[in-house]
Length: 328
View 1: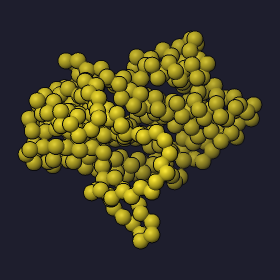
View 2: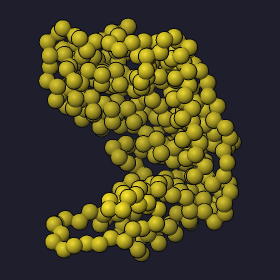
View 3: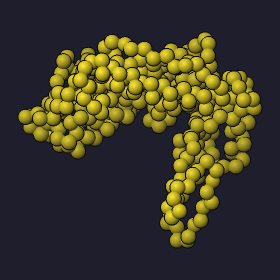
């Protein structure tokens, strides 16, 4: 999803339209009774003599006539199974690519992108908006909270939960189903990242107070169904800026800290993460160093992704420490 958001943010920043195509014949129904031999395609590697391991090189492809710069010659295609996202500065190049694909494959031209992987996409002259309103309503129905009263905040102030809770246990299957559904909602709701990660820590033996925390999140979702991301056009070249922070011993069971990161492409938020650190930090300084390392690895990956997309070197990613990051 980070790759998809980078593509959409880049399109919004450059003022490009995002197009959508679908392959009709990706999956075949029926059982094969014959032996099928498949020739190894380019971009895959083989490991071992007896066992073949195929590794896809990437799912983002750039087609360009010139090797540098953003211009009329750049055409970017994002591929997820049978769905193609197509962006570029030239409408003629996009239509030419669509025509070529239709000649080779049985494909549907879905026009401008409006729905992708459960995310609603709205394109207008002001930019690109991403939200999951319909999906959020389904999550509320799953939790039996579709008629609930909205809450003003997704969590009680200074809430502290433990795995050693003494309250009555609840259905773990339903609890895990709700947590998994909320995890997918986080794709367009960075404000819920920490909270969903927090309640995920109790899936082994959830209790009534853990379930109450999930219901509080759902009540907040009920009042913010239209919330999402808005990507706008910006002046200048695409550039990443990252923010990070950490708490100290926020997990009362393990005394581990939590790292939070945010990355913007220009003014558009494309990646965020709230994750419990793998080791116990002995000081706030050590917790900040661990968070810095997490942010640096993400910055390297994002900058390399942008290099692959644009075919040129990009500016160094700037990292900033910010106190009280909302992902913690």
